[in-house]
Length: 363
Image (cartoon, rainbow, N blue to C red; front, side, top):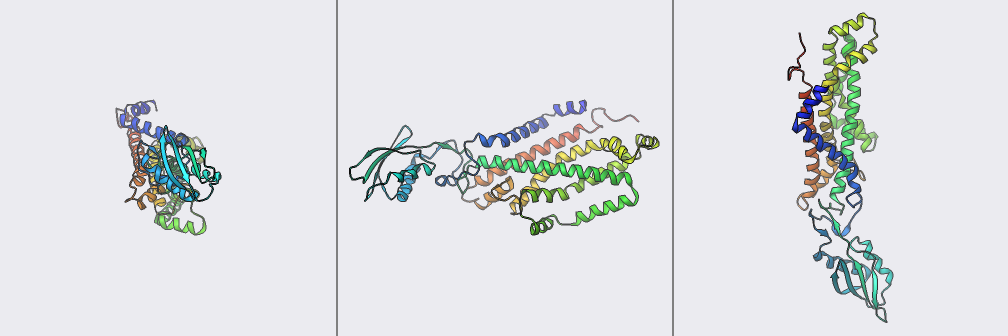
């Protein structure tokens, strides 16, 4: 294992991929708390805002926003000036203005609490000052006015969790099932492999639709659906490895010593299959994430208020012409993560290859 780890460390693309994956996992876990926006927070006046470094609201959008608020307050903005991040405005109305109407300003998410500076004797005119809030949307907002960076990081939690959990389930089931089938051999092996063939023949999307008939769509359904089918390849691979290992001298020696079948599987068969299994598991994670994204894109996966990269891509595809960043942002997160996982998986496979660097076993 030391040689394998050293070879993996020397692989610069693999280390870059591993560093990216660690950074992505940390960003998804901690990032939503640092963006300054709650994942479900809606900014009605900042719908479909393009990505950028400038603060919002921009000067040219403040006056239209004030006019919309004034209409709801049943007043007219007679004059407005901006200085040091504060809007000073004069409000007129045909009847006395109720100061409670000023609560519309902080509700808009563009302004802070208003302060009355002057008031006419008849109450038809107010001069108020309200701070203009500065908000940043580095990757823009979606069609409802939610911060896309925050939602993409939260979606990454779901996508990565599904990839890791479903892969772990496939690893455990496939490892046990394949090892038992390969070591038992004979009729039991034939029956177990025919069951695998039957599950292979079942169309995956049709299987998911059948589950939707009985269970509501959501994260749990995705995990069940993916975990039900993704262990099949793992089982076949472990079975092939076990069929080869059961002819080895150390397995025959263990049988000659009278060790039980479960003990032989646990101490001699399964540990010697972990190399190829680790590589397969590393490559299965991106496959599962892509499969979840496909289901969410079809509307069969994660449902609101939860979200995933696939669900965000589906939303972005519907708004491609008006807001292309809604598709580009989650797609970039997904593609970069899948690429890093595949690079790491390939590097791990090469590092575990005993034929490289003179590691071939002696005859």
